[in-house]
Amino acid sequence: MIMRKSIFKTVDRCEILIRSTEHSGVSSGLGIYGYTEDKIEVGIVKLNSARRLLNSKQFSNSANRIFILRERINDYFLRDLKLFQISFASQPMLEAIIPPYIKQYSYSRWRNTIRKFYTDINSIPAAIKAIENLCYTPKTISYRLKLISELDNVIESATEFTDINQYINNYAVLYDLIDYCNELEIVAKEVFKRKSYLLKTMGILN
Image (cartoon, rainbow, N blue to C red):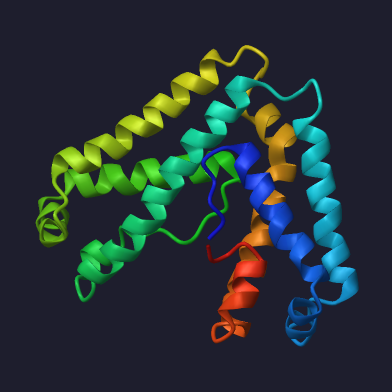
């Protein structure tokens, strides 16, 4: 998946990925999977919109801090979700803890779903016992909850945002670009898995 240590690095990575479609080998392989010139142009439009945002006066250090922290929380959540699904298999009470997939730019739902997920695990002894084999402890789960509280505090202290909805409205273009690039990367890995030089061209492999 697209590495997201900061908004800047994320957009740089997306640019490499999208611009690589100008390579004849990349474009011909992706074209079979629906990545026509029109669909690639959609990606270029999203990329240019993101660049304009980063170059605008609207962008701030606090916005980048929020972005980085959200990505950190989301990465933990997605990894934990996969592992816990396996660990909770065949235990109906525990399987019910697992939430459906949620997109980050539906912020309130994203935040509340993740908080409930970890809070439920921390409050059910059987869930804690089930994840012990994965080397998770109550302290690990408490750390995840602490990160969410930290995000709440960073957002609250970001004086340029009247509320989180303003943040989401301002920066939705970035998450829209990330979704596009993640999908493109998944398709490329499937198409070019035996042609690593093309994945390198796209910036997916080093």
